[in-house]
Length: 120
Image (cartoon, rainbow, N blue to C red; front, side):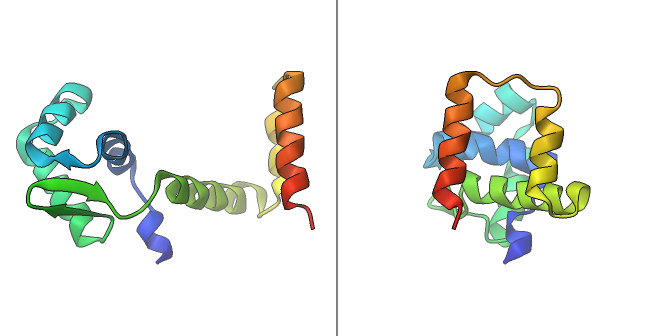
């Protein structure tokens, strides 16, 4: 199940389009992908087929919908990144991220509220 959320760059860009427009007719999806990604019809249909075979989306009666959420993919990618780059340490990630950033008071309050909500 974990590999279900692993998307390559082109797959993620494609999925973002589907998440934005779903449910979307496959013909309309080819038009959108041509405009936004520069893809030809066969490329879009190949991607639909590939992601359907992996259980990431479905195409029923020419209507494409996703079977996984953007949030699940983002969580998976964030977890992989933090484990790979920061040995799984969220505090190390946050410290590194904040070194070159300035947060507004509102952003700081929002982050603090998120942390307070998950601290046990």
